[in-house]
Image (cartoon, rainbow, N blue to C red; front, side):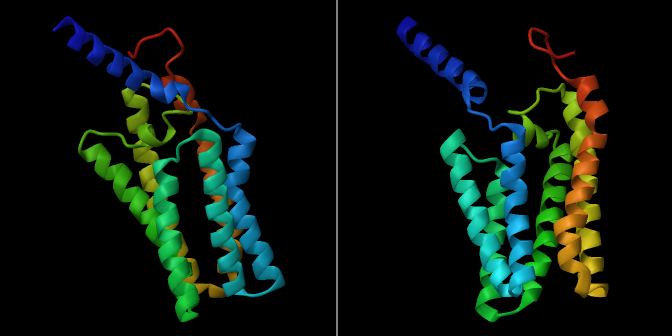
Length: 207
């Protein structure tokens, strides 16, 4: 009985320590992995056409995911979901030679993230903690506030993508590469006060 409890305790300890033992990418490296595929897409679009740019984006994205996994031994849930959707809609775009699929991809991704975050809150599970938990440690109230804000923000981005896609198609690439990037980074910076207010310092318990 004692041996059994010891094994269970050891397994529990390993599980609790695992997130802290994961290797973390430096912020600038993580940013490069996030923005690299978009930059490659814009260069491909500027020098060639939409379909070549789509292929370049897909290759660059999956390469960055592979390198990130090799360095950290794990992939964030949002990266996995995004990769699957990119594979499906990017593949449809190239197969049917139709830009519509790839232009709709951000709408699907943003709406899905919004549903997951807000749905998690309704069920009492702030899922944003599972995505950013390795980068920052917040109280439950902090995760709830950020999950609500990011969930609503993703729905706004989804709506904006549809407006630009349908009403201003000639400017969609610029909006996707520069507009959404600036909006997302700006929104993330605006959340800093919440993260500082609800951050759990080392050695402190959750209040």
